[in-house]
Image (cartoon, rainbow, N blue to C red; front, side, top):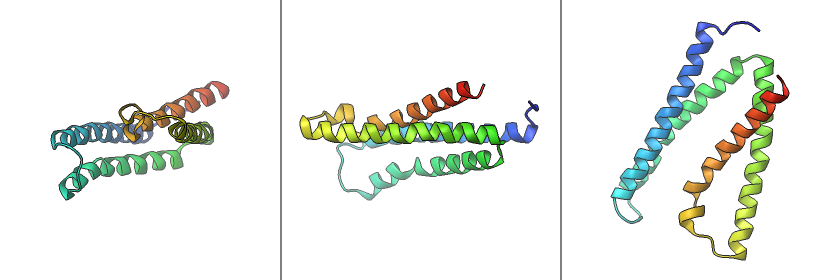
Length: 135
């Protein structure tokens, strides 16, 4: 296995740094929105809600560029991780939709802001599974 080049390391740091910025802006936006009172139709609230979109899009762009420049094994690992994550996310959404019809679900426990982190967990599961498989 070839050692990681300085350019590859910098690209990985950039994606990681943007993911941290995105997470911080997400939780910052949640705090600001919570401090603004109950939800209502207000352009200021919409603007605050959309702030995390910018660092997320930059993170996504850097991550995709990293994958384009990765070797075939790394690409295969990420593809397999997504092959696990996407169907698991679909199962989660399907089960939650049916459970919502079957019984009342508390939005405080099963709202969008509580469900989306599962998608990252599914992707990390896929990453671990694929890396173990290709070791």
